[in-house]
Image (cartoon, rainbow, N blue to C red; front, side, top):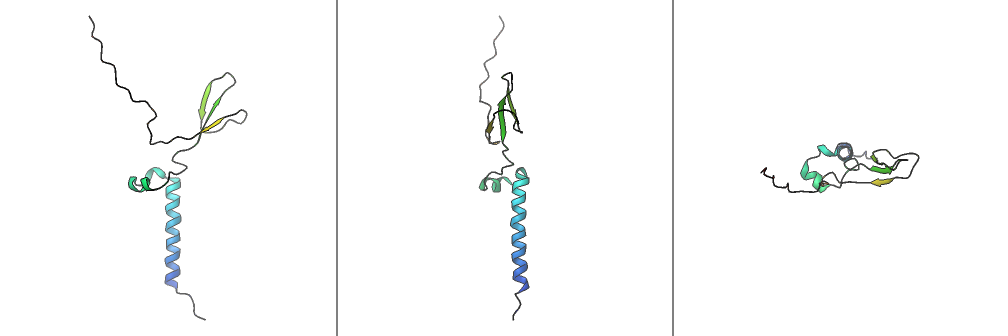
Length: 97
């Protein structure tokens, strides 16, 4: 019986380790992935965590990263690369008479 070549097994093991390591890097530290590579990859779930929007007993609106245990809530996902503040042009300064 001929034993399998060790070099090929080591190469496959090294490739598998590189893939698992790259996947862990993408998942756990999405902000540290280089921008050109980040543009080609799908967004990591950690890059845009879920937020939960709900109202308290007095009707006040809350947005938290943990869902409330005792009331209905809405899951909100956001893209951190999108500007959520509306752009505005400042009004010209008024001159005092």
